[in-house]
Length: 386
Image (tube, rainbow, N blue to C red; front, side, top):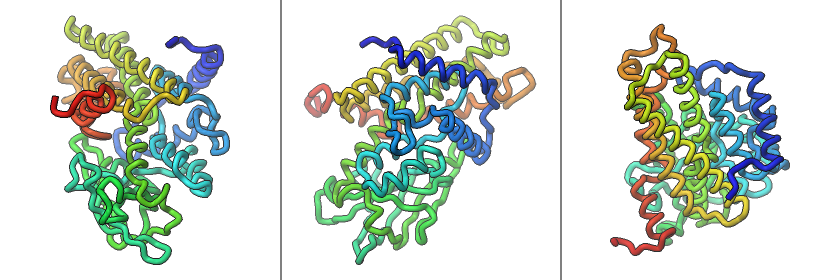
């Protein structure tokens, strides 16, 4: 594969760089959840209005209809400019684009791509662990509505979401992988309670969802009854792709910020620190190139959902390695909080939070151990238990 830009890609990249340069320097991300949310929402809308968000979605829904590799170019340039990726919506929007009815697509996609609708994903449950098929939230059909009872947990950004992509069991007698269905439901629907809880990072990003006789119209089912497992696997495949959820931009942005701090003299590295950061820079670039290859295969129609497990494992290693390297380079500064040493608002104020967040990378979107098992058995054809 040729990883260089085609003429069209090079022109697209140059236009984006010019657009970004006119907006630099961008303010640092706020430290508080609500302020950070508003910052990212406003930034996402600015990206959308500039034609950079949703580049690979159909023009019918407000995208630009470009190949998926253009999404990688956007994220690459955002990260190199030290800019965030904006609101993360791709993994849900892809599912609605693939499985939704025409009415659902027209209702949800334009608003989601503009960042006007915020989404969360109601999959995980307290007693299911990593066994998503073991979910026990149930939906019973009563007339023209499904009545849902159950609980979800580890639901990212539910506290701020307008809509939830909800996975429930609609057929208790079917095999556990065959009896699930998927719905879209407003988070302010009567009977649905969102209860955020604070993480070790200090953020309220995660939440529990409690569903007590929640009525969901039959028209809000995504796909067919019993198709929930296929939809869930498509969702987590997109969630595991670093391009679809913006992680490439976030990782590259961290590299840009630490490099700037080193060049300015705000951070002084010893030999071990330089070596660790050099390795992290190389790892992020390897991930960037790998994502380009994955997106190229997806555009060519030869990529598979199984291959995203490779993306997820590689992303886990890179994110955790980068978190370690930055924290080691900064020494005690992140533990002491922002000071007047030139690092406030650039690296120190977020390094500790980023490190703590990176520890979750081996769990969310499917644990690293499960991804390695998928790679071994379904991609490499190795026998189970070998």
